[in-house]
Length: 187
Image (cartoon, rainbow, N blue to C red; front, side):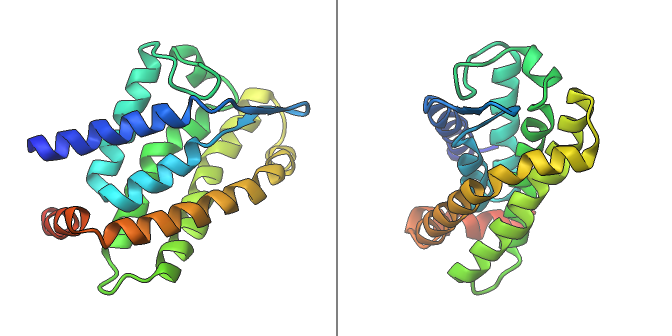
């Protein structure tokens, strides 16, 4: 990995940590808080691409596992991977990788492409991995966990729209445009 790529990976791991500074919103009926870190997942995959986006979020999760309090609300440590949020956390690098991969397949990337991928694959994949783990950890049925998770959809839709706008604009910037062109050749 080149120095520039290492810098991008570290930068997006730091962005995820910075998004964790924003206090979480805890709801009385579910232990999984509403956070801004989903926005960081969508940004990492969209801007860095599949490989670097996945690596940056894997680095972020390794730092969290090591005890660095980077999750929203100052949470960290290996214990967070044994709670109701575990599936959502595990989905971060997988989602970033898939987003980056799918976005690299568009020859002429438009805002509606980014938005479609973020809303369908991005948010859906986080839920697909997070909800069953949440159900298991809370000892409830998957349909009950789906009902609990419906409250997240409006906020995640807003985060997907914001991420899509940022990704679309930043991918046009010469720094990222050159990096994206080099990355798609190495995938």
